[in-house]
Length: 307
Picture 1 (tube, rainbow, N blue to C red):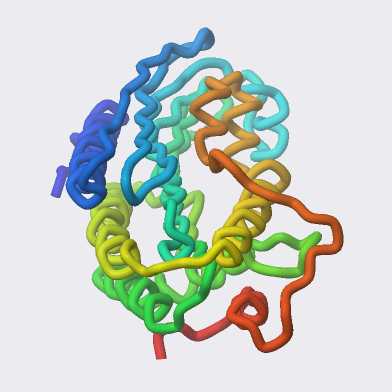
Picture 2 (tube, rainbow, N blue to C red):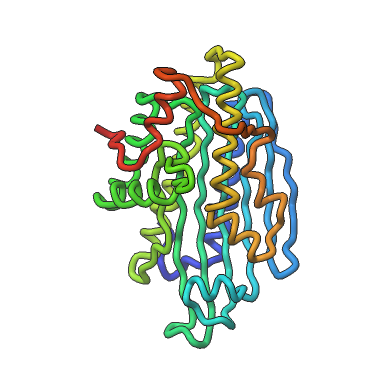
């Protein structure tokens, strides 16, 4: 554990860079063919990042992004967060979205981040918090896989606080929700934001790191289990439509996308979360008693996947 008095934003940044490296290595090994291509970039207002994209045997398109950006806090964000408008900000984190070839392998997203504000108008001169989460979007919901995923997340949460899992699971259900469709994006996971306590900064960061380090083992197991399952053209068509719903969420509701664009982030890196192909059909309907209908019925909040 890093000692609290030594836990600087620079050390947090280094930990996130290391996390990006380890996740990319694990995904390359699990995919068996794809290799990440890195694109380093600089932000005009301050900072930059490393975008890594993979197109492989199992992963059709995936991105593992690291960024560390800083500068003048945009007025729109300052107003939304009720922060002094002349504030300086610093943000660093790792963001991941993977879209697989096989519709029986789920889409997955993870983000872990640290945000810091400096202003003479703040009581201590600075204000900081951690955020993040991990959620799963199966094209076809398999209850066994959903239970595995949520039990793994609960185990991580319980190591730090017995109330974390249910609190952050409910937060994820509410966040990853397409209100214009009245459905969740997938089976949820955990989501948290603005975790902050001066007495527990290192403890909170340990939790964030544990979430990040759990990503590769969880997803590579789901890849291994489902990557060789046969699929039909009908199932592939369904996958494209579910990707369309994923796009809708990311462009309409996702706060990370909005933050990146509002801070003049790198557009290509921000939109790496979108799939290579997706589909929208007018008044699209599924057959009754089909696997597609079963999945739609399970795209709801407050499902207990653990018990």
